Structure formats: C-alpha cells, structure tokens
Amino acid sequence: MRMTKRKASSDRSSPKKRKRINCPEINTWLRMVETGKVPACEEQHLLAAYVRDVFATEKLAIDFERIERARGYQRYFPFELFAWEWFCFAMLFCVFREDGRPRWNQEFVYIGRGAGKNGFDAFCSFFALTKANGIREYDVDICANSEDQAKTSFEDVRSILENTSPKERERFKKSFKWNKEHVTCTTTNSKLRYRTDNPKSKDGLRSGMVIFDEVHQYRDWRNINVFTTGLGKKPHPRRLYTTTDGDVRDGVLDALLDKARKILRREIPDNGFLPFICRLDDPEEVHDEAMWPKANPSLPYRPDLLEEIRAEYQDFLLDPVSAADFLTKRFNCPQGNPDLEVASWDDIVATNRELPDLSGLPCVVGIDFARTTDFVSAVLLFRVDGTYYAIHHSWLCANSKDRGRIKAPLEEWAAAGLLTVVDDVEVHPDLVTAWIYEQSCRYAVQKVAIDNYRHGFFMRELDGVGYSAKSGNVKLIRPSDLMLVHTKVNSVFVNHDFAWGDDPMLRWYANNTCLTAAPNNNYTFGKIEPKSRKTDGFMALVAAMCVEADIPDYGQAVYYEPVCL
Image (cartoon, rainbow, N blue to C red; front, side, top):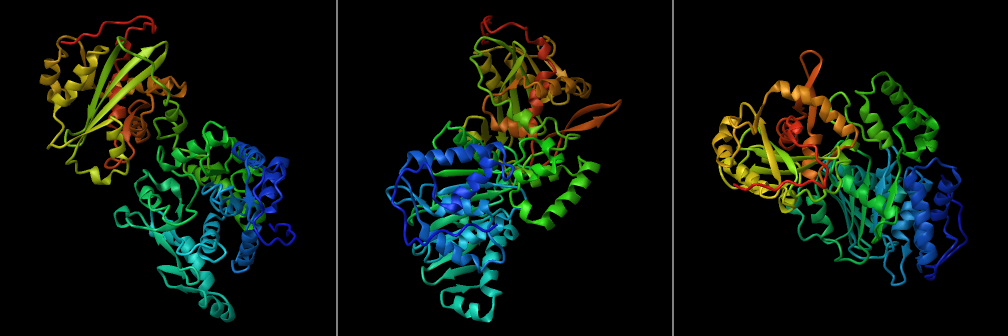
C-alpha cells in the first residue's frame, strides 16, 4: 500500500506534544484501525489509543528526513512496505524524546505467517546499516534458533546487493561489501550478520541492533540475554522481536505477550517497548474470512497468499486436529491437539493465581519419578471451598542423561526455589521425605500417594517420617486409579479450579503431559516426548488427586495444628 507523500521536510521536527500526529506513516495505520478500514484485534485498538495518548502527553520529535531516506531505499526492494510496516518502522527508527534518544527502542511484532515479517526485518536491517541511520559501527545481528531461519532476512539483503542491475550493482559496490556471511556498509563500517543458537560464542558483541526472528522457538532467555547485554555500547541500541505463534508455552513468547498486554492495558510503563500484536480475538473468527486480516493485515494486498490460506482452511475443516497448526501459525490462536493434551494452554495458564496462606490446613502429598537418576517431584494438594491449591518441588540428579536434551530454564527454576539440583549419582529418597517432614511442620499432611511399583524404594524413608501403607496414611497408586481420576482432573482444569501460584515448572510439566487411550474407553496419562519433556511434577499432582477425598472439606476459617514428629 502506497503512503501519501508529504511536503518536503529537511530535518527532525521540534519536540512537542501532539493531539494530531502529522506523520502519514504513523497516522495512516492508526486511522485504519480506528475507522475499521482494516479489521483489527483488541490489542491493535488498545495500541492506537495508547500511541495517541503518548504523543498527546509527551514532548516527542519525528525525524521526517529519516523517513524520506527510507522511502528512497524502498526502490531497491522487490516489494513495497504495507501500512503496518511503515508504522512499525517509523515508531522504531524515527520518533525521539526531548533528549534525542529513541522513544521506542524495542519493538515486538506478533503477526500471522505470510504477513512479510522477514521482508520487514530485512528492510530495517538495511536501513540501520546506512548513513541514513547515521551511526558508525552500528552492527546488526539477526538471530534465530536455526541457521536457515536466521539467514532468511540476511539473504534478502544480500540478494538486493547481488541480484540487481549491473549499474546498480556497481553503485552498491561503492558503499557496501558483502559475502555469504556478512554485509558491510563501508560508509558507516556497520556489519549485518546472522546468528544461531550458540550463546557461549557471543560474548564481547558490540551490536547496535539485534533482531530476534521467530521468538516462539525460544524456550528460555539465555541466548537472547547474551545479545541484549551487548547492547548499549553504541548510541541508540534497538531490539526487534518478530514472530508468529508456535508450540512452545511458558517460554520467551508468552513472557513477551504478557508484558505487551500489561503495557497496552496501562498496568506497567512501556520503558521503550512497543507491542504490535495481530491475531484473531476468538478462534471461531477463522470461519469468517473478513476477519482474517486481524492476524495478517498484509492479506488484502496479497491475493496469492489469500488463495493459499483458503486452501489450508478447507483442509482444516476436514481435519481440525491434524491441521491445528493452521490456527496457531496463520492466525496466532495457539492450539494444542485436543485429542492428546491433558489440558488446553489457557486452562493451564489459569492456574497462575496467588496462593492464600494455607498454614495449618489439611493436605495430601503426591510423589512421582521414573528414575531417581533423573527427576523426582512432590506436590502438596489442598482443597478449600472447591479450589485445589498445589505447592510443588522437584529434584534433579545433576548427572541425568537427559539433562542436555531439556530445553527449559532449569537454572531459573532452581534460583526460584522450585527445583533442587542434586550433585550425586541419584536423588536419594531421604531428600524428598525430609521436604515432606518440613512441610508437615507447617501444614496438616493427611496422606502420601505414590506409585505402587515405586513405593518400595521410598518405604523405609516414608516410615521414618510417619507415613506407611500399614498405618493407612500412604496410598499405593495403581493404573486403575489414574484412569478413574482422569475425569476429575479434567473437570478441575476446565472449571479453572486449580491454583498453583506462579509456578512455571509445574505448568511445563502439565504441558508436557498427554492423554493415552486405555481399555474400555478410558484414558490415562502419558508423555508427549519421553526424553526432553518431563511430566514428573504433574504426575505427582495426579497422584495427590487420587487421594483428594482424604482432605477434609473445611473452609479457610478452620485450621489444623501441624504435627511435626
């Protein structure tokens, strides 16, 4: 979509408050959202109101010369930027505070597959290298989890330099040098590189801008932190996150989405972070083609892409389970496999509710592990007025053979007190029973539930802290118990009656668990992937749910005196 050309302007506007934003690149997109010219999701409407409020209350300058120079570079690209792209570009590169620093130096673009985010990344990369950006040695790093993905936008830039007319190529040679690994703008000595997931080799970077492509693939912040901690050595450091949705939950993407929505709802200051979210407000909107631009605002201008998505939609209607990726990738409506998942991600996220003071209340304990040379988990389960509160802890053998396969922030969870890494050949049972004993000094532990086949390994240590099958306060869980409790667990999930506090590790366990068919139309619990996606913590919760009837159903006003042996 072409923008209306402004009158000639030679420099940056003076910082001032603006009730009207006299910049077509910014105002055109805002008006499209506000007037309904493009269908837009809730977050886009919140963004439009937020941006107008910031311009009306803060003294900001718009650098029109930068925009005009960027328009000059547009002719080198085999595509034209759409209205949403010009808006995102101008907000990131051309709006400045009174002190001359960028008003927004971080941008998060969450948009449906096919919208052109890699082309947008390429355009921003090219601009950042040049004298139009005006900063020497302003290196740009494009990062992704795979080399092919990281190279996509890099190759778009290199292709512009390489595959142009002979006349233009000679012109480019006066200002650029390039090969298959980097592009250098010789007038600014700024380099463009692509990077992959190997954070140990990135120390000492002096990036001016870092672009993180397909953020949904990042399970933790380690690689991102290596690049972002190198920012600030050059003026006007910038970060650009671009992504569709994906299958990784409780990772970097979900954290960015949570931050973005809090900013748009005015719950936290933006601190230079601009959220640009495009999605369907409701998965049911997928059946109304007119709503599709909510997730992909480029769609009205790309007829070939529209035809492709129409064909994918027909496949989705025939087999929604197999085509669940269609909603996730095209429309940013993440879908698990409803025939396999133990709970939807929305139901798992709903467990993130603050725990009340449960001191003195009765509870039960579930224990689960596959091998003591891997993970061992224990969960305290309380029932108060129909809500099931859970407190979890896990132990990990430092020598676990699966540890290297696990793409989860184990160090963060250990620092948060959710996980203990045991530097030994195994997790000894007395570590777990010592934890249970400590909890019994605060809570009234009624019963312990543990797998029938694993009880023998824990029997002596449990006896030592007062829990044994003979005395009736240990329940030995059998497969039939798991089949019986499945319906109860599902009911508690869908009614949002689980509350675990902010426990990302327990959410990770739950998201790794699937349902497997059992005889007589029953279900039991299994692992989505046996080596890297552990389920021990959730299965400890399931074990506790098998004996939830042993929790006296008292209200919060009734307390038991904890018993320490």
